[in-house]
Length: 402
Image (tube, rainbow, N blue to C red):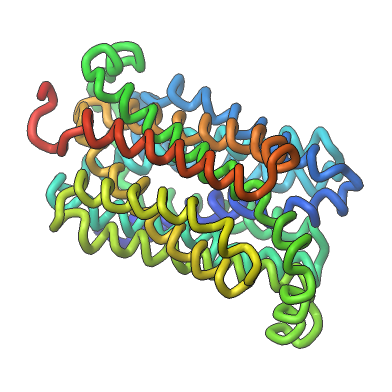
């Protein structure tokens, strides 16, 4: 099968995984009510699942040892099982174990897919393919969040887990026949370890710090997103949901719509990455996006009195946040070409650590200091990340030993 249909199937599987990853933030209050647990417990589980993702670099070389096809399909199957465990178990521990296994599956799947892109697409055109794949991240908001809000309102809080597991399984079955097989007895090139990669390319430490700061700053604010909307704009959101869904979805539907607006921003951000990062250069593209994100964090507190204004600031924030993160993935994939999956597993490990720190600290900082302080802390963190990237990270794709 040709490259683009395979990429479409890989993106479909990643859409299921990312929808689960992202639904937990805006719908944490609804899931907490369904399980009769405190919201703080759900946010702590969100932090826990990102900690599980930190073990991803230990398995970063799997797809280089056993082939992209086997590892991609296996991780999708594991994700499907983890989703179905949650509604079957109906309790704290099934939720904790299910979310942890889902994150473990993602920590294997993502480096495998990006390693496949690095193998199949030349560096000078890779931004286009990466931008297409990252549609699955925006799709978790733009498509997944409204879907989750609707099925929760109509079928209960457990329903999205059944649907997402089924979607991942469908993608896995299609990929089984679509992705090229590695012939039996074919030698697989040895891969470098995480320690060897970090020793050979010290700039990866800087990339790791950049990713960690950037994702921590976003999660500090976003982990409180659903609660903040419910407390501040409950009436407006409820009316929005009832208007658009004829009175059936209410508050959950309204939150889903606002989340879809953020998803649209991310979709445009990923589309911009696909269109412009190859033309302008990955490094300048990332730096411009990071500067705008810093400004939006600083502006958000002054916009918090108006739902339309909040939506506008969040739209711009997530539009450029996507460029700041996704725009660098093509660059990172070329830092050590013979160990692409290992490098990308380190990058995604940094993402997971940032999400874990932000999830754990987010509600605590919010409860102690409120919206404004949380946003200003996020702005400072992104400013530091901008400085690190500006001073130490050069454009990739020229030499493995540069």
